[in-house]
Image (tube, rainbow, N blue to C red; front, side):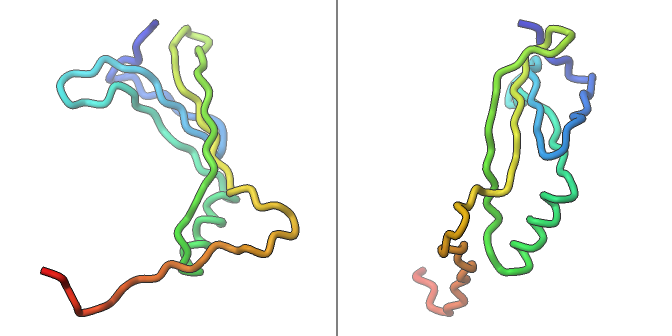
Length: 104
């Protein structure tokens, strides 16, 4: 299996996806690195959820792949969460405890 060289950046071309390539790791360095591309639609969704005071939850799918150059990598797809049409259960807003009672 080929290894992703440390100094060779690979740019992800597809919106709402992540590509993680193997690399030679030393010490505590990660053994996979890559990048994420977010499309305008997903950025808008994240912004709306944040402004509504909700935690942002995304669905992620992953595949093991081999690039045209023979590099092994993991491809991830990122989407808004699936909501069954007509579902009444909307995500609950975040609740932040602002209590002054600190137990220590």
